[in-house]
Length: 476
Ligand code: NAD
Image (cartoon, rainbow, N blue to C red; front, side, top):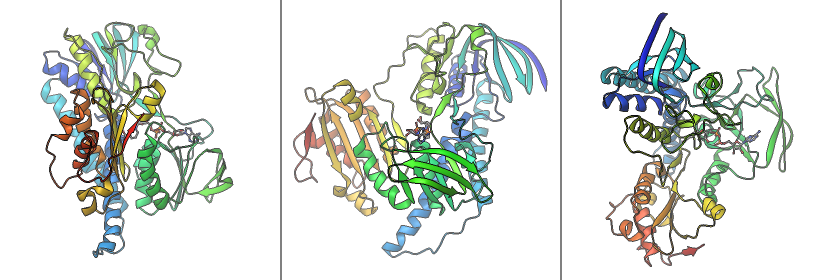
C-alpha cells in the first residue's frame, strides 16, 4: 500500500474504453493526467469481463459450429473435445491478459500515471479521496468520470447461489452446464447463449417482452431468431420468471408465460436483464454533480456535467451503453478541456450483436422512424442473391438501406448475416459523410464479398440491382 497527495490538471476515474482513451488523448496533447481505477488491470468491463472475453468465446463457438456444418459439405472432424482449463486460459491470458497488459504499457509509455486497485470518491468539487492499494487525495482542475456500468441483478434473483450468474460469472466458463436458463433476450443473453449452445448446453431463453433484442428492427431479428430456435431448446417470449429456488439438483425456476407455465429445473441460470450505471458510492453529491433517478449523470454536448470542470462519459453518462460510444465521447471531453471547439453529435452510433448470424445497424432504424414520423424508402437486398454468401453456405442474411425519399441521402443501414459487424462501418461513414445512394452504388465493391450487398441495396434505390429481379422499393 502507498500513500500519496497529488495535484493534477486532469483526473480520469475509470480505465475502460471511455477512461483510458481519454487519458491517452490528453497525454498526447501535453496534459499529464492521472488515471484511477478500482480494478487491478486496465481496460474496464469491456476488456476484462465484457466485449473482449465474450468475443473470444464466440470465436470458439463459430469454429465448433462451422466444423459441425462442414459435414454437409463433405468434411468431417468428428465430435469436438473440450479442455475447459485450456479454453479459460486462452480467453483470460492470451486474449484478456494480452490486451489489458497492452493498455497498461500504452499508458506508461505515453505519460499517463495509472493508480490501479484504488477507488476514488469525491470530497468536494476539486478533490477525491483514494482508498485501496493507494491511499491519500488528489486535487484536480478537471475530472472525467468514466466509471461504466454493472449488471442489473433484480433482488428476487440475487440469492447468493453461484449457479445464478451474471455475465461476469458466465464468461469465466465455470463448467458446461447440461441445461441453462437465460433470463432476458437482449445482447448479453443471446451472445452468451450462443457460446454455451455451441458447447452443448440446452439453452432456454425467457424474455419478458414480445420480441428479442427490443431496439433492433424486426426484419433483422427474424433470421437470427429462426436460427436460434433451431440451436436453443426454447425461446419463451411474453414470459416471466416468477421465482428461482436453489435445490441440490439445480435451480428450480417457476416460469409464467403464454406457452410455458410451471416449474423447470436448470443447472445454471444467467440473469441478463440489462445493466445499470455505476454512479453510486462515489459521493457525487459532495462535488455537486447531478444524477438522475436511474443513476445516469446528465451531460451536455461537450460531456460536461452540471459542474463545468467535471465531465462524464460512457455507460455512466447516458445510453446506449456501447464501448465505441464512450471512446468517441472521450475525445470530445478532452478536446473541450484543451479549449478546442468540440461536440458529441454523431449521426450514427453503430450497434452490433455478435450472435450467429450477427445483427448490425447504424443511423435511422425503422423503429425510430415510426416513433418520430420520419419518411424513408427501404431497400432490402436478400443474401439469397449474394454469391459470397452462397460460397459460405450462409444465405440467411439481409442488407437494407433506409433512404431519404427526397434527397436520396442514406439515413440508416441494417445488416443481419455473418460478418455484419465488420461491414456496418461503411454505413456509418456513408451516413456521417451525407452520402446519397448513388455514391454507394457507384463505389466499386470487391467481388465476391458480402460488402457487395451494400452496393446492390444502393443500386435498388436507383431503379435496379444486378442480382435482384424485381427491385423492391418500399416507401414509408
Ligand atoms: P438488454 O437491455 O440488451 O436486454 C435485456 C432484456 O431483458 C430485454 O429484452 C428486457 O425486456 C429483458 N428483461 C428485463 N427484465 C426481465 C425479466 N425480469 N424477465 C425476462 N426478461 C427481462 O440488456 P443486456 O443483454 O443485459 O445487455 C446490457 C447492455 O450491455 C446492452 O444494452 C448493451 O448496451 C451492452 N452490451 C452490448 C453488447 C454489444 O455491443 N455487442 C454486448 C453485450 C452487452
